[in-house]
Image 1: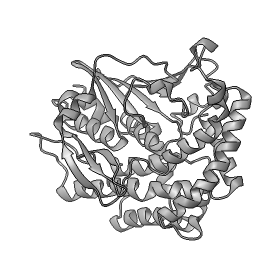
Image 2 (image 1 turned 90 degrees about the horizontal axis):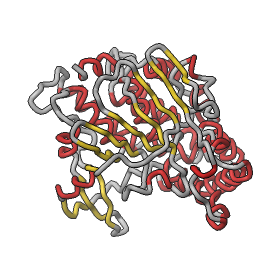
Image 3 (image 1 turned 45 degrees about the vertical axis):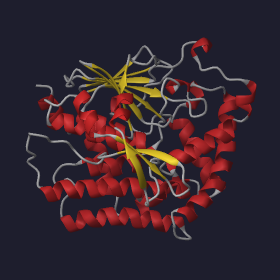
Image 4 (image 1 turned 45 degrees about the horizontal axis):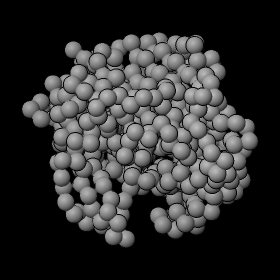
Length: 396
């Protein structure tokens, strides 16, 4: 089953039964598998031979936070022309892994999420979409060949394609996706096509001199003429913790879930179960991905431990990050960072933690920190689409 479930009546839906629907209150989930070998991405013998090692590296990149760059960014130039890449001529051809239909979603947006199921950044976006009650299609990207996103020059996930009244737009980077859609919810007079202009792409040189791209303002909400009812301190605090989630918490994951070879193997088995690899790959290929990937990531995790300056016992670093979060909640004396209800920081932290819910590291976090009460409350809020009032207002 998937790493994140929408409701009790959906838990037993199998991808094998793509004609069946799962219903939970006002939520319908359709899950679809490849119906024929002709529809599966082609694989050459050479590509299959290296698939295990490659997928290990790919997932390692995902878990270590590929969106986070060096602290000392050196801007080279800013070009608004780069924003033209957001506009697509048409909706890319895709085959949905599952479809989330929310009856309360009247926004007229058609959203397609290209993702890896256990990618923490993808989990962030799903948590946001589910909490507010968006309808969207999910496309599980082949972590090796990435045939599902061959149409895109941007080769990371998540990618969210939005069909609007005035065209199709490709939204990259989890934080930018969330900020843009949250801005849309807060002021539906702003269209997606207008909002993308507030998130320009900037090019900079990293510490090795290589050119990189990032998105400016990706943690900022665009209120424009509509005044926010929130205080400036509240907005800044939310932004601070969203950045903390991407720049601190996410870097705790890889060294912990791949801490030992046996733990790395357990993690890849969780990936296989969560992503339902058996439906997309032959049994021998799944076995290769699990075992070779686990070995590769166990070795890579040692370098990540050093890179992010984690403690000798990496669990302690993970516990300290979780305690930092719950400590801030305790100091604030509210159940959520957003006060009585979750805000974008809550959803970001929940999404990242949710990405490794089936791993030993997560069970250890529950046992050794005070995160459980907040996490369980967040899970229920996301599952029940607790933020759908804002989406209903945006649709009017």
